[in-house]
Image: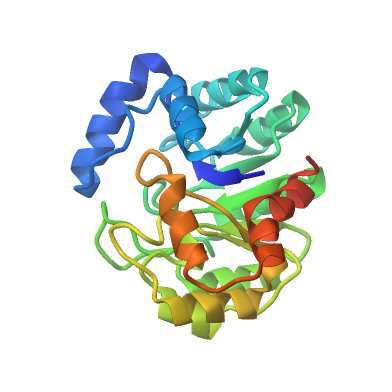
Length: 266
């Protein structure tokens, strides 16, 4: 079984415009047009059984529509949608509660697109609310090709966040810090509430195999989640990188599906 913990899709009416804007901003070409049907098609081609679908509210007024779309994806048994709230918005906590009641298992934050620092106190109540409700908090981690430094979710701060909020379960994307992997290998230690996903580590920037193995050793094989970042990368990109690392069949089974199944109670 293969569970992709990091993918994206948009409502059909917005997909073309959203993909064009994101592609231009980051200077990267997508592998699909951003519709849910496109995601399912690529999942079939790449042998992905289930995908976590991530959305972002880039301003408070987007929260309701973004989360309504996420809730609508619950109808598809192959998709595991996460919602999103804007850090510090007046409705962020009530939106998290609404998502939980609907059956959503987590939310995503993107510090660059949402213009906040992961250590900003305005977002602390959201971390605490997710802990209270048993929901996962997933962060974009590290650099982003659409933005210039300084970035707001580096490995040192993310590692500290796990100490500050031990009851909140965090997933840090892109092996804990896109294009900051040597820093990630130095800074991350094992936390019971920390997971890393493997999305987009073998495309625009490519993680060194020895660094990847060090990060996995530090965090623990049981806390690594397979991810692609579809439509910006395909499952085969991450899978090929993992196969280069000389991991055992049991280690790969944990990364490809078992860790995600346990985390999300699938």
